[in-house]
Image (cartoon, rainbow, N blue to C red):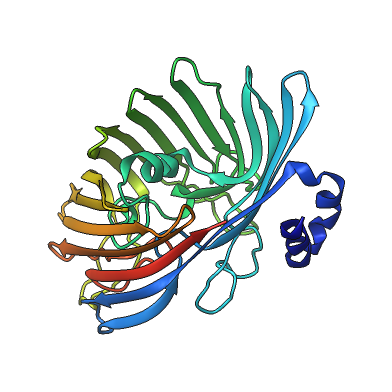
Length: 362
């Protein structure tokens, strides 16, 4: 009840909802902050207090109502914020992380509408990456996991029930450009298997890069950006092994997070034909978990701007909900490539970074 009262103070517009069905609304969140040391960038080395290093700090509201007959109404509203300065993670956007409503059935599956995760990012963060897309070792440093590859607005998502460990999910996002129903649209489809310690996902995402004509402007037609990811992990109990391989093809299939982080005379060129690979592990150690990974970016264009990264980290459980962590990662860029070492919330400024922080969930 105290938590619901707090939620009403933080988000008064939802007071009526919580009052009507208190037992069906869950308030949850993450508070994550620490110290980041970044080196190697054109602007020089920097040490800073940063929010969302391992997991972006957030507060969310999740609700469910039993409609009877194996059918439930569900919703999620989730906002990101920064611990270091108290601001929203996204300017002028309250629920930037997730905002959707839908219906769920154990026999028919789940259908939701709104701003939601791309199945491609879910596979990267939940299956492929031992760092869970966070800390200095984040898969996002070399794999294309920003923008619409993470979350998609105006999206319709359907997920099947589990059939002997297999599920299928699909996302279709409308481009909402007048005069052209396909311009700017995105679709993503994934096949997953979970069972006996094994997790495997195969996901394909296709982004239409066209721009419809508006006013006197002419329409712009470009090739689609395509990403296909195969990811897996297997839990041996004493160690959990991770592996992933991705094919990136077309414009915006592998954007560079920072335009020219190293002040090169010729700025790096975003690849339109590349492959990404990852191997990694997690292992219990004491009251915590060791994380390690190695990633490689193979640019197959004439620029041949390859890169590789190695990373190590350790998360120590102070309780079931609180952990302290440290991590370090180093990138080697080749032939004028410009990839940077970031974390869950930031893209980074140089080719190496060290993290030390604290994470609490509620």
